[in-house]
Length: 122
Image (cartoon, rainbow, N blue to C red; front, side, top):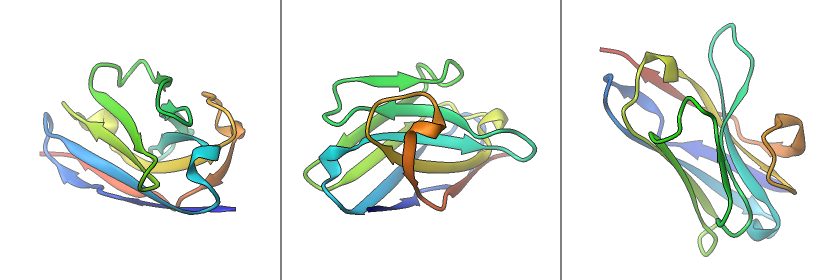
């Protein structure tokens, strides 16, 4: 079992930046690939970015490539999502998730946090 808690969401103006954090507790953090997903009202949950256990491989949604950066700190059991050049389409509830392999499919992730809200608005 692993427990995940997201933080860092909030209200930001278009063009602004945020950094989301995912704090993990429980089983060995390096056992897991990690991912950020988001869900906007009326839409399906979608992959934002994912990272393998040692940080050497990543995946991004096309819509965030070049703007978002996923990273992890295995020494402190943390994962991050740096988000730049935010726009209204990025407004969503952002979830962190843990799974046993780097995948784009949310069904590959076994553990989920409760989410942190990101709202991009002027």
